Length: 143
Image (cartoon, rainbow, N blue to C red; front, side, top):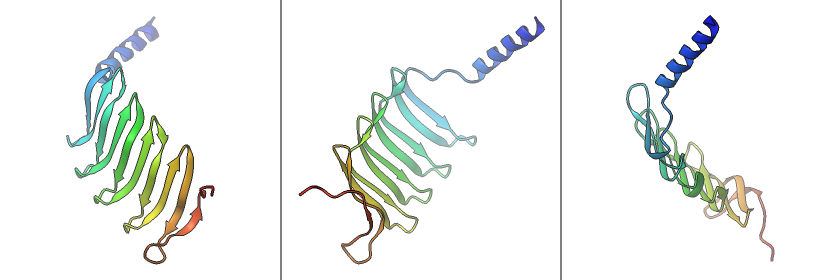
C-alpha cells in the first residue's frame, strides 16, 4: 500500500513538472538561462511548417520545413559561429534535390543531387582546381 502511494505521488509530481506538448500551436523551448533554444508549430501533435533551433549564443542552428510531421522542403544547419554546415532538400520525408555540406573552413565537401531516390554527385569531395571536384562519385546518370 505504501509503495503504491509513493508511485502515485511520483506520477503526479512528474506530470506537474512536464506538461504534455500541445497538439496544436507554437511550441518554444529555452536554455536554462532563458535563451530561446527552439520554436516549432504543431498541428495534430506533429510538426507543421517552419521549425527553428538556436545555439546558446543566440545564432541560428537549424531551420527546416515540415509537412504532416515529415521534412518537406529546405533544411539548413549552421555552425555555432554562423558558417553554413548543411543544406538538404526533402519531399515528404525523403531526400530530393541538391544536398550539400561544408567543412569548418567553409569548403564544400559533400555535393550531390537526389533524383527519384538515386544520388548523383560527390561525397567527401574537395575542389582541386576552380570548377572541379575530386572524390568518390555516388552515381552517374545513364546515357
